[in-house]
Image (cartoon, rainbow, N blue to C red; front, side, top):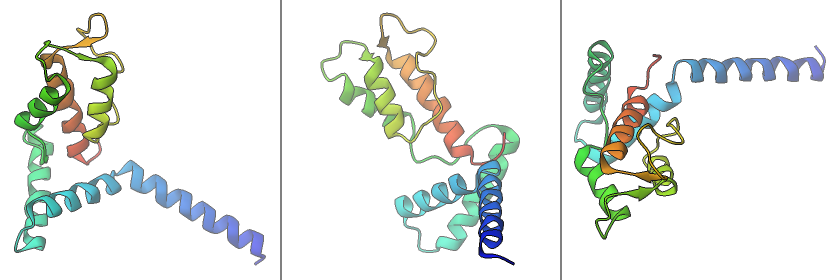
Length: 141
């Protein structure tokens, strides 16, 4: 087999492997597991990973309680840092940067209910919850 043929075969396998990993959200799953381990630092990491996987399996069936490092108090803290004077809104740019910082990639550029590029806490909370649920689910929808 020529070198060029071998290279094309490897490129094809590499592309197939990447597609498989993307289709099944394997990279997201391992990122989630690793983040959970680093955050919680359990004495029994393998047992902890099994518990996370079981929780993911259960949440897939119920569509509830996805394993996530962030809860509403974290979301509220982030919003509070972006609105320290209590104006009652953050800018559209702050909203986008905050969700990206939380690891959320797929969110509406201008969420429903936005007026004059101002994002209220309720809108931010809703979009952060939805985004974190998607990120934390780590399985095919």
